[in-house]
Every structure is written in C-alpha cells, then in structure tokens.
Image (cartoon, rainbow, N blue to C red):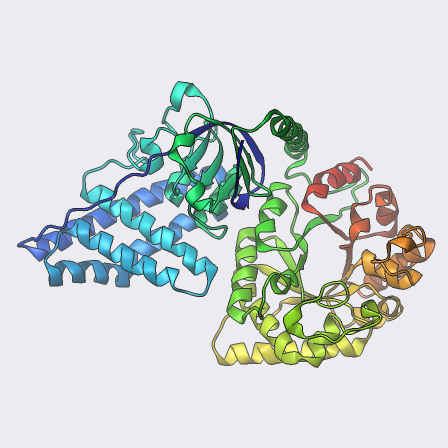
Length: 559
C-alpha cells in the first residue's frame, strides 16, 4: 500500500480503479505572418466562438447545478471579452508578427503569471481560469471541436480521455480520476456516472475546479505533487476527501475500514435525499432555522452538502490560529468573501476573533494568566487593541458586498462593550466609504450569550443588536463555575443542569420581548435529547456541526 497526503477540496470517500488522464500537449508552433490584420481577425472570430461555447456550457451547468454555480462561466466569458486581454493578444500579433495561436498562448502565460503573483489565494486560483479560456480559443484556432458542440463531439483534455458526458469510460466502468490538473470547463463536463472521485497533482481549494467538484458531490483531493504517477493507472485506490489521504493498492484493513465509513456516508446520503430542501418544521408548523458551524472556508462545502440553511457560526479565530503572523485585511477578506460567495443567499454569521483562554497564539504576545478562561480574551482583546479589531471589521464589511454576512461579537458581558464595538465598526464603515469600497450598509450585528452577565442584561443587549446566539459551552462553564478544560470536573459540568436551561429560557424570552431572533450555536444544539425542550422554549435557530444537520432536521420534522 502506498499512502499519499494531498489537500482536501471536496469531502467524501471513493473506492475504485484509477484512471490516469494523460496530459494534453499544448505546444503551439510560433510562425511569422505577413498580414497581422488578418491574424487579428482570426483571433477575434475564434474568441467569439469560444464565448458562444462558454454560454452553452454555462446554460448546461445552470440546468444541472443551478444559476449560482454557473456564474463562473460568466466570469470566463468576461475574461475573454476583457479589453486588456484582447489588447495583449493583438499587440503581440502586431508587434512580433506572430500567428494568433502563439499570441493567445503567450498572453495567457502573462496573465496567469500576474494572477499567480497576487497575495489573494482566490486571485491566484484565477491563473488556471485564464489558461482554460485561452486554451479554448487555441482549440478553435486549431480547428478542434469543443465538447459542448450540439452533436456531442468532443475534443478537450478530459473529453479526449473519454470521461465526460457523451464520452465512454473503459468497459463502461466508473473510475477514480488521477490527473496532473483539471480545467474548470473539463470538470463541469464530467460524467458523474463514470467518475467516483478526483485526484490532481496541481490545483487549490479555492479554484473553480474545486468548487465544481464540491457542487457535483465528487470526493476530490489536490496538491499531491510529485506523488502523481501515471503508472497507477488500473490500480485500486481509496481516496478520503475529508482528510486528503490517498491509498494506492490499499491493504485489507484499510479497505474494510473505508468500506464501513462509505456505508455510513451512504446511509447519511439517503437521509439527505429524503430531507434535502424540506423545511425544518414541526408537524404543528413551528419553524426553526437550521444552520451549521464552521472553522475554515473549506468547511462551507460540508455545509452545502448537508443542506444546512446557512452558517450560524464561522469561528474566525482559526484564521489567526493557523498562521505564524497577523492575517492581513486582504487575507481575511479573501477568506470571508470566498465563503460568502459559495453560500450564495444563505446567511453567513461570522464571529469576531475569540482568541485567549484555551486558544493561544504566540504573536499576540499574551501574558500568562492563572485563570485564562476569566481573563484577557475575545472582545476584551478587540476593544483594547482596536488596531487588530478594525482590520477584521474592514475585511468583514468588504466581504459583505459578496454575500449575506452578519457579524457576531463573543464574550459580551455589558451593553458598553457592544456600543464600543459598534463605534469601531462605524469607524471602519466611514473609512470604506471614503475609499469608495462597497459593503452592506445594513449588515446585521449580533452577540453571543455565553456569560451569566449577558443573560441578566439580555433585555438591554437586545435593544442594541439584531440577534442573539447562545454559546452553550461557555455558558455552562461560567454558570456552573466549572472549567471546561478540567477533565476532573466533568461530572459537575452538566450542560443539562436546570440552571443552564433556565439561562437559555431567560435569553430566548428577552430576545422575543424585543423582536429579535435567538439561536444556539454550542454543542447542546445538536443534543437530540434536548430538542423537545428547545422547541418548547421557542428557539428560532440551531447551528450545529454539518453532519448533525440532517439527523436534527429529521427529529424536528417528526416532532
């Protein structure tokens, strides 16, 4: 057995025979031409044909996966119609007197290098997109038929290997596809009946190819680099799209374990098919919004795969915990914007950084504390180091122009803390207005209710914000005076304690008195033994781990 570690881009397990896609050689001959104008006309005609092909591909994707997922091909069309792109190609033709094919390839390399050099990982991923659209133009110039042709004839990378719609896999079997890389247009045309999963040597989690793989529900792993070996063709493999692990020629123990996991996943999928798109509503008509918790942008795929209605808690501190230096505004904007775009119209509630206590970061240079859970953490850091806080708020505001983002403040104990946070938020808004940067002027603000003080002050807090979200993990800790990190206190830290449940009840009642909604984003939200209690108390929203969404929806719908 050979074990390879890659980067997870789409969750799921696939077990099957490997099909290695041979890389298509896009060597283009450089020819000197006598009539630059005629060559420019060739380029323009090929570009127009490519734009029409992309329109057809866009419509195909929209019909199968929805308008939201088809938008990337609108972006591809805009790339081809960009005046700077055309000017670059035509400038090369005119100045160097070269053929259109060579000019297109050269322009693609220039633009791809420009994107790859940018700080934003999302923009870096666009390097693959510009190569994809340019390849399409080169195909037209070279007289190759595109896979989107009405007669079903096919000619692009994946198509030439027989794995797209209208293509035929070897022996009609399904395969795990191994490739150096896959272009978005190739991925969009994959025949899902013949593809079990994807493994590529190159690529990133932010690429359009990765997003399409998640949309199609295909387990996918990228970034295996030099471990990519064409000799794996025909061998059995297991891929774990959650961990990013690839097992070539797996031993019997590995096969048994992954067959068991796959069976569990298929049972879960059966539940998904039964409940997908169904409202989270009791038999008596009580409606509950069912969201999911995430820690990283890549987790959004699991939210969509499990049909959550939105993200109720994006733990933004993981953007800080996983770095060795301060995450810049651009880095954070990129992360929040990626999630917002992927979620479309669904709400994305992002908790501002909750560093401190059990989550320590060296570059914050926090002093040692005897009782860190009661110390310098979360909103207290943000309000005393506003230069850090404002960077995050600016990134959140900028990302709000790309989706349905809300901001949630953690560890609130007083009305003054909320007002101070809102003041810094207003400063960030004012700066962005001055810089003519778009954002959602009416972005919603909420607070986490996770201290007894915030419960007692819930009526006053409700007048300041748009929603409450109860963090039951910390609320249990502070209500019962039990350190959640101390295993010897486990028998005393009972989250089912009447004291904790009464705190939850008081919070819900205060929220409803003031006309705002109240949810739960702590672990208790997924505790099915308490679902009846939460429904009786009138909870408006529950945010749980993505895999808990469907079992919880099932219980609520049968209540």
